[in-house]
Length: 615
Image (cartoon, rainbow, N blue to C red; front, side):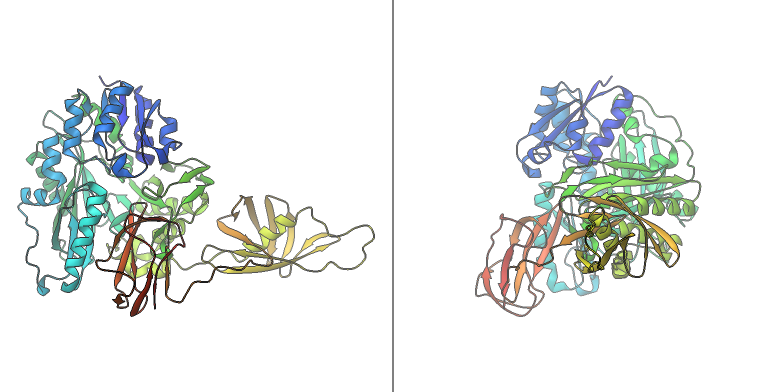
């Protein structure tokens, strides 16, 4: 019987596993990097062990240190979560060799399926070799890991060598394995997957289907179960293929078999088998009324599954809330998460953050997953979109508005979306529409109690002016007056104004504005504002052609042979930045000469740092 579990992971998944362990009466142990010393998962565990350093390669990817931590803390089992070492057969074997229980599939099964190239061989498939023009477009993929790391779409043959090199470098950095391969790229397919669960007694469950077609940078954004509009015959076929894959490697525990289904033909292409729990597992839990983590633990203890899985009911949808700016090439955001709260009933929020926590630069930018379950898909969409719209998020820019608009988009509501959804619709989905009255509400809230009248004054007060900036970089200027009756502004009637609440009547309709202040921003309902000084200080001027870091991160690579004086063409990649598990390519803005290069590979940079100058 398992009595104490160490989770070899961080953030949201560690907190989620700890929740189930507490319900089962199992003691919990966390591991944490120095950057995560005060992270939520380290705080809520019964015990926590430090992994010195901040970079994943020095901490969460050090299997030897994690095994030592488990032994030192008295844990008798290890759960890998997802990502990091969750699909590392060597780590699984090291856990077993240390006399600990491994809550996952056998190392041999991981070895067979964790490499996408070996998995394809098991399924009778082969990667592309000797790619020609007729094969295009193709997809370069990392053989290990997941989450879109080491993945590149190539549409021109001349770009293939460079993309192979970039994919290898990213895969090596993320998974410690630089193997990549090439396969045909299916344009506009749907990403469908099957959750499996197998015990040590020969039972394999196929738990419905999930649609994960809404993706950015090959990483999922919105997932749902069951996959809508999939014919029963195809569902049966996918279940059979998934069970066959599991039995082929004597699989035990939770896993996911992923497919790409062509539009029109309905042909299913095997992608990979993930030998771990998936980020989107809550939608399957909601539909089948199960706890997959609890079942993983019972399977690891040798307890048999029932002969048949429970029956599915209703529809579930999950949205991943990221600290990122979709309008700026999905640039990840760091800083303090002042407040995160769902203002709706019946919403499951899995998160690794609490109010006041800092979002670090070293790891994935996902803040939370919001999950709903309803009798029908239409009800689930409405419920989740409404819940996200009312969610309080104070801190860095997030993708919340994108999620709401995506859920309400006609292609999603009619289940006609595919993996190219954001390629087609990102511009319209990220159009900035800040509340036009939010800046005025902020100004009136700030002016509360600051009357400009003294006992001697008998002339009208002069207009007061305030300036604010919204996250899209636009400045907003508002004016208001102090009168004998209180505060007033043109075009509205000020019904009420105090430090935390402003009520305005606009065209006969009363609207409430809740105002919250922090050191660096003001939040008015869902609008984030940055106060601007009345007389702005001079800003540093950069030379024409200056390339500035769009985010804090690490320079992981500089283009081969790039030096000051080198001639470059517009759009040519110059260097690559990595932050929060995302790689960002810096390209030449114009054809010209690199007049200055200020960084080298491995260098840490802050947002706005001068990287290079092309003129």
